[in-house]
Amino acid sequence: MTLLELILACTILLILSSAALPFAKYAVLRRKEAELRRDLLDMRDAIDRYKDAADRQKIRTETATDHYPPDLQTLVKGVPLGNSSDKKIVFLRKIPVDPMTGRTEWGLRGSMDDWDSKIWGGKDVFDVYSLSTDTALDGTKYSDW
Image (cartoon, rainbow, N blue to C red):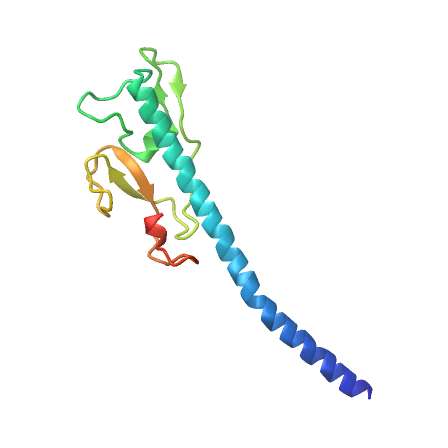
């Protein structure tokens, strides 16, 4: 009787653990997706704050631009406030790592690029997106977020 109980208990544990494995896999993926959404929101917010400061002439920008940052690194390095060269305003602490690709490289769109363009014109960062070609749990592409 004891051997039969042991086999039955092992079978039940095997069934329960095999049922829990997909839940753990999706939990990790959901965490990565939430992190991606947060990182995109943070970078877009930093771009908007840069644009707002440039529009209100708190920071100096090139006159031929639309007052967007020239690249993401400018948001991290900071920009001198007004005419003073000793005070800087920093819009982003660091360029976050894309949780889907594991790199700090992001797709960029300029203010003169098409809204769905995957090629950056090299001037003025208007928007950022993930370079991942994978599909999210909701069926959309990460690069479309």
